[in-house]
Image 1 (tube, rainbow, N blue to C red):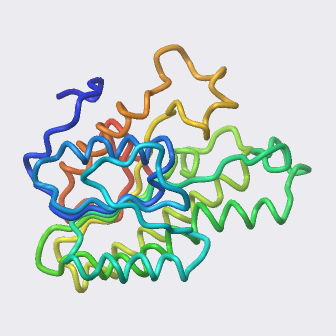
Image 2: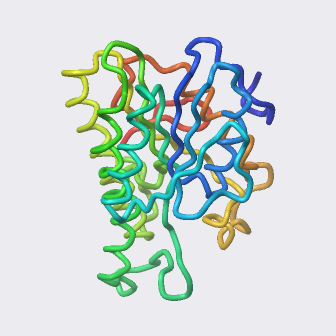
Image 3: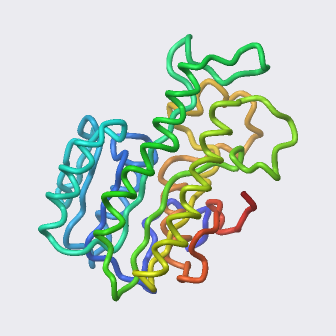
Length: 254
């Protein structure tokens, strides 16, 4: 398979058994579910989101979760814990815009404290809380993956044009949180991998207002991005933990 294919990836290096997708009702989250549902080794597939995905595969079980509400994260983790260690957790959530009052800032004058707080709650604090309750569910003696959707615009070293203050800053914060997770987890889970993923510019609700600026051929379908992300995760080893990767499997700087 190449990254241009939209067929389900064949995860032959590291067969998965128990997997959880957080943000399963989003465009990329739903695509991840569909691909994982075709993975024959998976026996337990958890779809976690505030509302059930439009299409929940027969192999998946939906659990309600709101990443801005710690109690829902804890409850979901406690339910999943009874079914054995997780091989993979993917947090496919993100907030870039929400109605006319929450839009990416073009200049300093556009900064709003409430919008900053909301962006950080969804893009940084939420995944951190998911990690707090779900990282302990990874196996201590086998390979386990904790991955969050990040963004290249959250790279401080790659920022050349400015703008998008809340989104950039919250994704940069997420990248630091993931690095911390990787360092701490290395002490107890020697084979664990923690990473942030740049899914590309994907045809989802998050990108719709900005798709007119995307060059021809650069807008990915959700299933293409999801397949590429899963293939990338399948190639990672414990020494890759703490680093960031794009949908093509290339490491990029925070």
